Image (cartoon, rainbow, N blue to C red):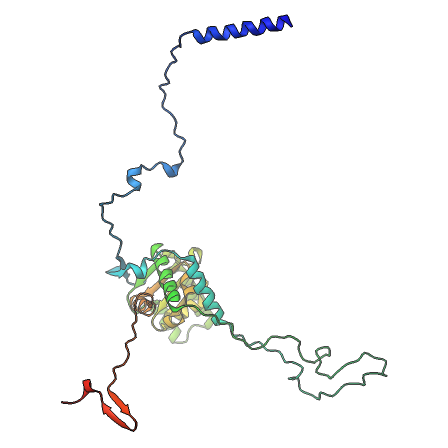
Length: 324
């Protein structure tokens, strides 16, 4: 016990002696400190924030190049409102529009006959008791072969409702999504696919069979769209025209693996999102935007002015509209 006390006392004295010594100089580390910040925080604060006095000028118009087809030579440059072709991506609104279109295209014509719609007599097949067999009703019972269907499908309407302004916003959001990605190609009016003259002459003369025509068109369209990087390997292409063009629609019907051709009245929001790019006529794009801008136009209902007053069986002109 005495040894432990002496050892503790010596350790305490040694600690006091060390505390009384002067502080030694510690060499200063001159090596630069390594920053542990992530890549997202490396931008200086001055570039992130904006001065209060600095004015913010949002984009109001966007340029659109009008091309010729199939050479894709630029012909002119037009400007469109940013509210038409430069909207932010809204996946929720696009989802609502696609579901709305899908619900309203369902036919709902499946209908099975009930036991009261099956032809035949509705009398009881055999007596309730005494035959030694199970009790049974009429031949139209769902339990009998050839009888009615229990809880079968009936005619119904699967259509759902969607606010018109939300639907129109989805149209312009889909167009804006294509424009931002550079997948909206606007061409001059009269979009059509030119075919070789020798092929047209031989086809009109009846020198080619249907199989040879389809094989030639399929190869021809595949080579043209493949050279433009518009074919099957690059997501296919949707052509939208104001009216049906014989060469283009026939070629896309034969070579459907490379794209599709639609008229304006047959286009939905889903069609604008399915393929790799959209090739549309200038007039069709303007008509599409004009039809789907109800959320940008405010309509105020103004009551009709009263032009006459009815008192019993007598009708008098309203004083404001009375003739002098």
